[in-house]
Image 1: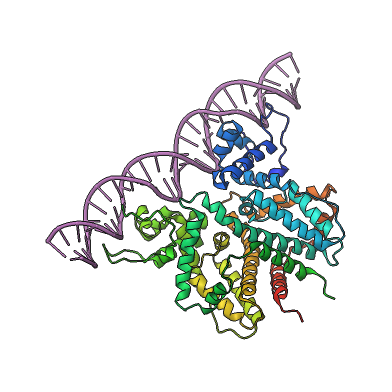
Image 2 (image 1 turned 90 degrees about the horizontal axis):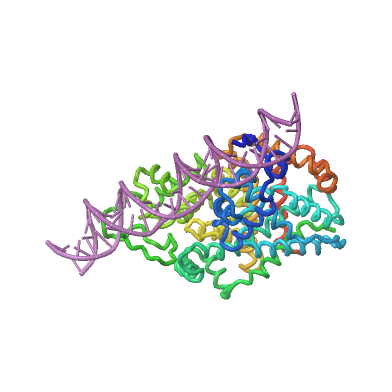
Length: 237
Length: 237
DNA sequence: GCGCACTACGTACGCCGTACGTAACTACGA
DNA sequence: TCGTAGTTACGTACGGCGTACGTAGTGCGC
């Protein structure tokens, strides 16, 4: 038995190699990439210790030498794709910079539709998360106010981006497991909703849905949401 | 075999009783309550078809007569606790009313810490969700603007309440499964973070964390977030 | 009053996370 | 220099999970 401490452990604090024993055959980055590959191709639910081990070409239990718990594998995945964040020299216009950050995050989640599901808990201060946060703070240098306020801005913006994008992606991600098409699913839901609204018990809801008869332009909704969040932090004159 | 259609189905559109066959021994509400009881007492991960069936005192597979898929059990649970929303006659002050809604939702999530995890996907238009949304729209009657905008307000407010409360509850909910205490866990995370920040690579992050030396007042953060969201929708003069 | 839709539920399949034991290997302390 | 302790690799096994399927019994609608 390897005798891993039964003590709270942050995976990033654990050295990849201690020196003793045989050379590890895999790297943390390689494992993370394998997991990301599986998640991208087959959905997050396909990411099991067995599946990732198979992807790497090693035995299931060998993975546990690198990753003490599955949850840590998730942390590795989030950090791996966080490396795709492109960081730039802040422009001096914090609003424009933060908009760019938000759009980048959204694009990242579109590339990796499983990401919002793993972001829901506390953001884990992984190496790339730290780089990302530091970059956001740098972009916010021109904004007057305390660091606390700036952190609140980052948190709210991230939250809104995650929530909105997750809702959009949820349908598509769900479709992978379902035995019917997303169109059939939404048709059934709309039929039910229409029937309920026709009952007259929810007049305002009915009005809201007849007002926007056509499909909603999610991109515009997202854009307005971003604008509102940033406005809420703009210094009032 | 009962021959349930292999077709998308909204659980709320399915009648509880068709008239044929023996009287069902359980009700949808009873099943939902049993599941909520298990989740409240033992955490969401304890909610399995077997466990809920045992709670009801019936065989595992009997549950499937009422709930075609586990996902539908989750929908039942969300709807059941949504009934706890207290609805009132709108005061005419939409801002005050929406603040009250937000605080109520937060209290609901504190009573049922598993709720945020089930709210993450698209809000499902369950019966109680419809009542809740109609009530929110009624509170927003005094707000000028389209129904679309009002729906966006509700969505953003709900999103922010959910995100903030979920982050707060995540630690406590995780603790149930972990072999160590949340204090040990956070100590380990803080130790790691401190060491990273001491490296000097993240000067602004370091400054942010030394600025707020004491524990953060989450209640105040939440309150400020609510105010900002509502401000963002207030008509500009 | 017949038949069929429905309820109840036991069994079984193929997954999952992961505890544990064993064997091979290598850097360090004596 | 060499044992030994700490590692890696990984097979086996356990106790869970969701749920497909088959069977038996029940009571409404024709």
